Image (tube, rainbow, N blue to C red):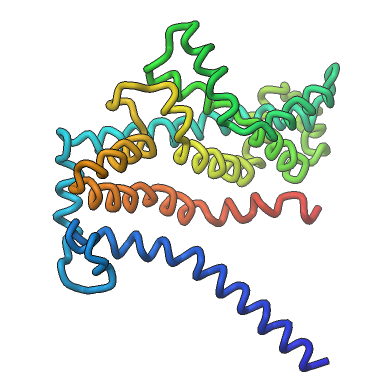
Length: 280
Protein backbone atom coordinates (compact mmCIF):
# COMPACT_ATOMS: atom_id res chain seq x y z
CA UNK A 1 0.00 0.00 0.00
CA UNK A 2 2.83 2.37 0.89
CA UNK A 3 4.59 1.67 -2.42
CA UNK A 4 1.39 2.28 -4.36
CA UNK A 5 0.78 5.54 -2.53
CA UNK A 6 4.36 6.68 -3.15
CA UNK A 7 4.05 5.84 -6.84
CA UNK A 8 0.78 7.76 -7.12
CA UNK A 9 2.31 10.76 -5.40
CA UNK A 10 5.33 10.67 -7.71
CA UNK A 11 3.12 10.52 -10.78
CA UNK A 12 0.99 13.40 -9.49
CA UNK A 13 4.04 15.54 -8.72
CA UNK A 14 5.50 14.79 -12.15
CA UNK A 15 2.28 15.84 -13.88
CA UNK A 16 2.17 19.06 -11.85
CA UNK A 17 5.83 19.80 -12.63
CA UNK A 18 5.32 19.25 -16.36
CA UNK A 19 2.23 21.47 -16.33
CA UNK A 20 4.12 24.19 -14.45
CA UNK A 21 7.00 24.07 -16.91
CA UNK A 22 4.59 24.17 -19.84
CA UNK A 23 3.03 27.30 -18.34
CA UNK A 24 6.21 29.06 -17.23
CA UNK A 25 8.59 28.41 -20.14
CA UNK A 26 6.79 30.71 -22.62
CA UNK A 27 6.69 33.42 -19.95
CA UNK A 28 10.40 32.92 -19.26
CA UNK A 29 11.18 33.14 -22.97
CA UNK A 30 9.16 36.36 -23.23
CA UNK A 31 11.01 37.85 -20.26
CA UNK A 32 14.44 36.96 -21.64
CA UNK A 33 13.64 37.90 -25.24
CA UNK A 34 12.46 41.35 -24.19
CA UNK A 35 16.00 42.14 -23.01
CA UNK A 36 17.55 41.40 -26.43
CA UNK A 37 17.97 43.47 -29.56
CA UNK A 38 16.97 42.28 -33.01
CA UNK A 39 20.39 40.73 -33.76
CA UNK A 40 20.30 38.65 -30.57
CA UNK A 41 16.76 37.49 -31.30
CA UNK A 42 17.62 36.31 -34.80
CA UNK A 43 20.92 34.86 -33.58
CA UNK A 44 19.18 32.63 -30.99
CA UNK A 45 21.19 34.22 -28.17
CA UNK A 46 18.20 34.43 -25.85
CA UNK A 47 19.89 32.67 -22.95
CA UNK A 48 23.06 34.76 -23.04
CA UNK A 49 23.57 37.60 -20.58
CA UNK A 50 25.11 39.95 -23.09
CA UNK A 51 23.39 42.58 -25.22
CA UNK A 52 21.03 43.65 -22.44
CA UNK A 53 18.69 46.02 -24.33
CA UNK A 54 15.54 46.10 -22.21
CA UNK A 55 15.60 49.84 -21.50
CA UNK A 56 16.49 50.64 -25.10
CA UNK A 57 13.62 48.45 -26.32
CA UNK A 58 11.18 50.11 -23.92
CA UNK A 59 12.33 53.55 -25.07
CA UNK A 60 11.89 52.59 -28.72
CA UNK A 61 8.52 51.05 -27.92
CA UNK A 62 7.06 54.31 -26.60
CA UNK A 63 8.59 56.48 -29.33
CA UNK A 64 7.80 54.33 -32.38
CA UNK A 65 5.17 55.93 -34.65
CA UNK A 66 4.79 58.98 -32.38
CA UNK A 67 4.20 56.88 -29.26
CA UNK A 68 1.11 55.08 -30.54
CA UNK A 69 1.82 52.15 -28.18
CA UNK A 70 0.99 54.37 -25.19
CA UNK A 71 -2.33 55.19 -26.86
CA UNK A 72 -3.03 51.49 -27.37
CA UNK A 73 -2.24 50.84 -23.73
CA UNK A 74 -4.65 53.53 -22.59
CA UNK A 75 -7.32 52.20 -24.94
CA UNK A 76 -6.94 48.68 -23.50
CA UNK A 77 -7.24 50.04 -19.96
CA UNK A 78 -10.43 51.89 -20.89
CA UNK A 79 -11.94 48.95 -22.75
CA UNK A 80 -10.96 46.37 -20.15
CA UNK A 81 -11.01 48.05 -16.73
CA UNK A 82 -14.01 50.34 -17.25
CA UNK A 83 -15.79 47.79 -19.42
CA UNK A 84 -15.22 44.96 -16.93
CA UNK A 85 -16.39 47.12 -14.00
CA UNK A 86 -19.61 48.26 -15.69
CA UNK A 87 -20.17 44.83 -17.22
CA UNK A 88 -19.72 43.16 -13.84
CA UNK A 89 -22.32 45.47 -12.30
CA UNK A 90 -24.74 44.46 -15.05
CA UNK A 91 -23.92 40.75 -14.77
CA UNK A 92 -24.19 40.67 -10.97
CA UNK A 93 -27.51 42.54 -11.01
CA UNK A 94 -28.92 40.19 -13.67
CA UNK A 95 -27.65 37.06 -11.91
CA UNK A 96 -29.07 38.30 -8.60
CA UNK A 97 -32.46 38.88 -10.23
CA UNK A 98 -32.47 35.38 -11.74
CA UNK A 99 -31.63 33.90 -8.34
CA UNK A 100 -33.86 35.87 -5.97
CA UNK A 101 -36.95 36.88 -7.95
CA UNK A 102 -39.75 35.06 -9.71
CA UNK A 103 -41.03 36.40 -13.01
CA UNK A 104 -42.70 34.96 -16.12
CA UNK A 105 -40.55 32.63 -18.25
CA UNK A 106 -37.64 33.00 -15.86
CA UNK A 107 -36.02 29.65 -16.60
CA UNK A 108 -36.59 29.97 -20.34
CA UNK A 109 -34.83 33.34 -20.32
CA UNK A 110 -32.00 31.87 -18.29
CA UNK A 111 -31.81 29.09 -20.85
CA UNK A 112 -31.18 31.77 -23.49
CA UNK A 113 -28.39 33.12 -21.30
CA UNK A 114 -26.84 29.64 -21.17
CA UNK A 115 -27.15 29.42 -24.95
CA UNK A 116 -25.22 32.68 -25.19
CA UNK A 117 -22.45 31.14 -23.07
CA UNK A 118 -21.98 28.41 -25.66
CA UNK A 119 -21.81 30.76 -28.66
CA UNK A 120 -18.19 31.67 -29.58
CA UNK A 121 -17.57 35.44 -29.58
CA UNK A 122 -16.16 35.28 -33.11
CA UNK A 123 -19.56 34.12 -34.40
CA UNK A 124 -21.15 37.31 -33.05
CA UNK A 125 -18.57 39.67 -34.55
CA UNK A 126 -20.26 40.02 -37.94
CA UNK A 127 -23.82 40.55 -36.57
CA UNK A 128 -22.42 43.11 -34.12
CA UNK A 129 -20.66 44.86 -36.98
CA UNK A 130 -23.88 45.05 -38.98
CA UNK A 131 -25.74 46.48 -35.97
CA UNK A 132 -22.96 49.00 -35.29
CA UNK A 133 -22.91 49.97 -38.96
CA UNK A 134 -26.65 50.52 -38.92
CA UNK A 135 -26.42 53.00 -36.02
CA UNK A 136 -23.21 54.65 -37.21
CA UNK A 137 -20.85 53.38 -34.50
CA UNK A 138 -18.30 51.57 -36.67
CA UNK A 139 -14.73 52.78 -36.11
CA UNK A 140 -15.60 54.44 -32.81
CA UNK A 141 -14.74 53.70 -29.20
CA UNK A 142 -18.33 52.63 -28.52
CA UNK A 143 -18.29 49.92 -31.21
CA UNK A 144 -15.92 47.90 -29.03
CA UNK A 145 -16.93 49.15 -25.58
CA UNK A 146 -20.69 48.54 -25.65
CA UNK A 147 -20.67 44.84 -26.73
CA UNK A 148 -18.22 43.85 -23.96
CA UNK A 149 -20.61 45.12 -21.28
CA UNK A 150 -22.92 42.14 -21.74
CA UNK A 151 -21.46 38.78 -20.82
CA UNK A 152 -23.75 35.71 -20.58
CA UNK A 153 -21.13 33.75 -18.64
CA UNK A 154 -20.95 36.59 -16.12
CA UNK A 155 -24.72 36.39 -15.58
CA UNK A 156 -24.55 32.61 -15.16
CA UNK A 157 -21.68 32.88 -12.69
CA UNK A 158 -23.35 35.71 -10.79
CA UNK A 159 -26.50 33.62 -10.27
CA UNK A 160 -24.42 30.83 -8.74
CA UNK A 161 -22.55 33.29 -6.55
CA UNK A 162 -25.77 34.95 -5.43
CA UNK A 163 -27.20 31.62 -4.29
CA UNK A 164 -24.05 30.99 -2.27
CA UNK A 165 -23.49 34.42 -0.75
CA UNK A 166 -26.92 35.95 -0.14
CA UNK A 167 -29.25 33.97 2.17
CA UNK A 168 -32.95 34.50 1.60
CA UNK A 169 -33.39 35.05 5.34
CA UNK A 170 -31.26 38.20 5.20
CA UNK A 171 -33.43 39.63 2.43
CA UNK A 172 -36.60 38.85 4.33
CA UNK A 173 -35.22 40.57 7.43
CA UNK A 174 -34.34 43.63 5.37
CA UNK A 175 -37.85 43.77 3.91
CA UNK A 176 -39.39 43.42 7.37
CA UNK A 177 -37.32 46.43 8.43
CA UNK A 178 -38.99 48.43 5.66
CA UNK A 179 -36.20 48.53 3.08
CA UNK A 180 -37.23 48.56 -0.58
CA UNK A 181 -35.91 46.09 -3.13
CA UNK A 182 -33.38 48.52 -4.63
CA UNK A 183 -32.23 49.64 -1.19
CA UNK A 184 -31.88 46.02 -0.08
CA UNK A 185 -29.82 45.19 -3.14
CA UNK A 186 -27.48 48.18 -2.87
CA UNK A 187 -26.99 48.19 0.89
CA UNK A 188 -27.18 44.50 1.75
CA UNK A 189 -26.93 42.14 -1.20
CA UNK A 190 -24.27 43.94 -3.21
CA UNK A 191 -21.99 44.13 -0.19
CA UNK A 192 -22.39 40.42 0.46
CA UNK A 193 -21.68 39.78 -3.23
CA UNK A 194 -18.36 41.66 -3.03
CA UNK A 195 -16.12 38.58 -3.54
CA UNK A 196 -18.46 37.32 -6.25
CA UNK A 197 -18.34 40.70 -7.97
CA UNK A 198 -14.52 40.57 -7.96
CA UNK A 199 -14.61 37.08 -9.46
CA UNK A 200 -16.89 38.17 -12.31
CA UNK A 201 -14.77 41.31 -12.76
CA UNK A 202 -11.56 39.30 -13.16
CA UNK A 203 -13.12 36.94 -15.70
CA UNK A 204 -14.47 39.84 -17.74
CA UNK A 205 -11.25 41.84 -17.42
CA UNK A 206 -9.24 38.94 -18.83
CA UNK A 207 -11.69 38.34 -21.67
CA UNK A 208 -11.84 42.01 -22.69
CA UNK A 209 -8.08 42.55 -22.34
CA UNK A 210 -7.43 39.63 -24.71
CA UNK A 211 -10.24 40.61 -27.07
CA UNK A 212 -8.92 40.67 -30.62
CA UNK A 213 -11.44 39.72 -33.28
CA UNK A 214 -14.13 42.28 -32.38
CA UNK A 215 -11.73 45.30 -32.51
CA UNK A 216 -10.27 43.97 -35.75
CA UNK A 217 -13.74 43.91 -37.32
CA UNK A 218 -14.94 47.21 -35.88
CA UNK A 219 -11.90 49.49 -36.05
CA UNK A 220 -9.78 50.94 -38.84
CA UNK A 221 -8.30 53.92 -36.97
CA UNK A 222 -5.13 52.66 -35.27
CA UNK A 223 -5.48 55.31 -32.55
CA UNK A 224 -8.52 53.34 -31.31
CA UNK A 225 -6.76 49.96 -31.33
CA UNK A 226 -6.32 47.96 -28.12
CA UNK A 227 -2.95 46.35 -27.42
CA UNK A 228 -3.93 43.00 -28.90
CA UNK A 229 -4.75 44.47 -32.30
CA UNK A 230 -1.93 47.02 -32.27
CA UNK A 231 0.75 44.44 -31.53
CA UNK A 232 -0.74 42.20 -34.22
CA UNK A 233 -0.30 44.95 -36.83
CA UNK A 234 3.30 45.49 -35.72
CA UNK A 235 3.98 41.76 -35.85
CA UNK A 236 2.63 41.71 -39.41
CA UNK A 237 4.89 44.64 -40.30
CA UNK A 238 7.90 42.84 -38.81
CA UNK A 239 8.06 40.52 -41.81
CA UNK A 240 9.09 43.55 -43.87
CA UNK A 241 10.71 45.67 -41.13
CA UNK A 242 12.56 43.40 -38.65
CA UNK A 243 13.09 46.29 -36.22
CA UNK A 244 9.50 45.70 -35.08
CA UNK A 245 10.30 42.27 -33.61
CA UNK A 246 11.92 43.51 -30.35
CA UNK A 247 9.09 46.03 -29.95
CA UNK A 248 6.44 43.33 -30.30
CA UNK A 249 8.22 41.17 -27.72
CA UNK A 250 8.69 43.88 -25.09
CA UNK A 251 5.22 45.25 -25.86
CA UNK A 252 3.75 41.81 -25.19
CA UNK A 253 5.65 41.64 -21.90
CA UNK A 254 4.28 44.98 -20.73
CA UNK A 255 0.80 43.99 -21.91
CA UNK A 256 0.50 41.21 -19.32
CA UNK A 257 1.55 43.41 -16.39
CA UNK A 258 -1.94 44.84 -15.60
CA UNK A 259 -3.48 41.35 -15.50
CA UNK A 260 -0.78 40.03 -13.18
CA UNK A 261 -1.05 43.05 -10.86
CA UNK A 262 -4.86 42.83 -10.78
CA UNK A 263 -4.91 39.11 -10.00
CA UNK A 264 -2.33 39.51 -7.24
CA UNK A 265 -4.12 42.50 -5.70
CA UNK A 266 -7.53 40.82 -5.74
CA UNK A 267 -6.53 37.19 -5.21
CA UNK A 268 -8.07 36.78 -1.76
CA UNK A 269 -11.46 38.00 -3.04
CA UNK A 270 -11.10 35.90 -6.18
CA UNK A 271 -10.31 32.71 -4.25
CA UNK A 272 -13.26 33.17 -1.91
CA UNK A 273 -15.50 33.90 -4.90
CA UNK A 274 -14.55 30.63 -6.57
CA UNK A 275 -15.54 28.66 -3.46
CA UNK A 276 -18.92 30.37 -3.04
CA UNK A 277 -21.66 27.90 -2.36
CA UNK A 278 -19.34 25.00 -1.63
CA UNK A 279 -20.07 25.30 2.10
CA UNK A 280 -23.37 26.65 3.33
